[in-house]
Image 1: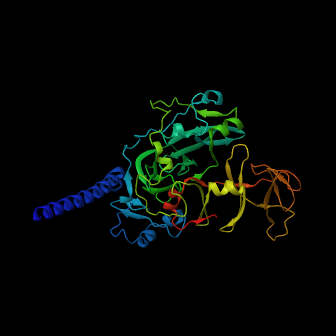
Image 2 (image 1 turned 120 degrees about the vertical axis):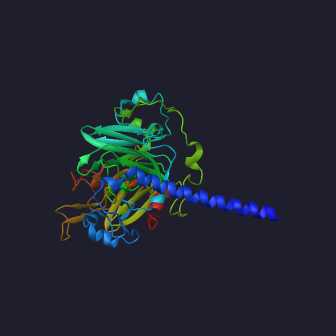
Image 3 (image 1 turned 45 degrees about the vertical axis):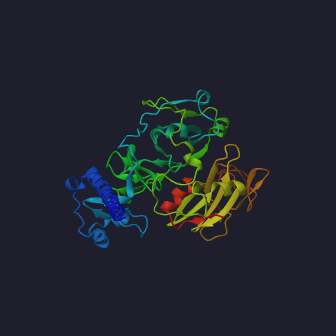
Length: 403
C-alpha cells in the first residue's frame, strides 16, 4: 500500500512539472518569436501587472485602444493585451498552414464539378461582380490575400470556430499580406501581418501581441452562404480555384464530425450555455457593447427591427441566397421631423418583399430604396462576425443575446 502511495505522489509531481514546463516553453517561444528586446526602442516594463504607468509613458497607446477595458502590458519586451500563456500552439509551425497569396479563379460551371451544394463559403461583391471562397478550400489554408477589382481584401476562415470574416488588410497605412502563425487563442485562428509580425486574433480582428497590440482591422462586407444558393444567384461569378500551389485533398475535411458535436479542441477563457456551443451566430460590437443574433432566430423571424447601443438596426434574410444582412436603419432625409434630420425607418415584409412602415417605400435586400418617397436612399451596411457561438462568447463574455 505504501509503495502505491509513493508511486501516485511521484506521478503527480511529474505531471505538475510537465505542465509548468509546457507553460514556460510556450511563453519563451512567443518571446523568441518577436525578439522585441533587441529590435524595439520600447523599454521593458518591470511591473507588467500595473499598466497605468505604461499608458503614461506611451500616450499613443491610449489613442489606439478601442475601450477603457483594454490594457496593454509589456512582458520580457513583448507588448500584449492577452496573457501570453493563453496563446497556444495549434500544432503546425508559422506558415505551416499555407495562406493563398496568388489566388486563381474559375467559373461557376467549372467549380460545380467538385463543390458540394450543402457546403458553406464566403461571398464578396464589388461593383456588381462576385467572388466565392469555398470553405472546402479555405479549411486547408485559412487565409487568402486577394485583390478584387483593385481592392485589397483579406479573406479568413477558422475551421475550429467556423468564423468566415473578410477584413481590409491595412496596417500602418499600408496594405499588407497576412499569414497563419500556427497559434490559437480561445481556439481561434491567430494570424500575423507580414509588415510588423504582430499577432492578430481573427475573432475581432485585433492585434493581441506585438508592435500593434490593441489595433483593429476593419471588417469588410461579405456573405456566408451555401454554394447551392450562391451559384443560382450569381452564375457569372468567379470561384476560388483548387490550383493553390500546394497539394491538398480538397474533397475531404480533416475536422470530420467536429462541426456538429459538442466541445472544442482547445481551452476557452469563457463559456456560456445560452446556446449550443456550435450554434451559428452573428456578433456585433457597437459603442463598446456586444450582442449576438443566432442564425436560427433570425431565419425564424425573417425580419428583425432592433435597437442596440443607440444604433437602430434592421436584420434581413436575402430571399434568393438566404444571406443574413444587417443595416443601420437610420437615414438623413428632408421628411424627417427630428432636429438632426435623422429618420429612423422600420421595416416589414409583404409577400417576401421589403417595405418601410414610415413611407411605404419598397426596398431591395441590398439596402436600396427602389420606389416610393425614399427612392434612391441607401442604408449603411453593418458587418457582423459570423461563426460558432462559443467563439463569440469566449471573446465577449458580457454579450447580449437576441431572443
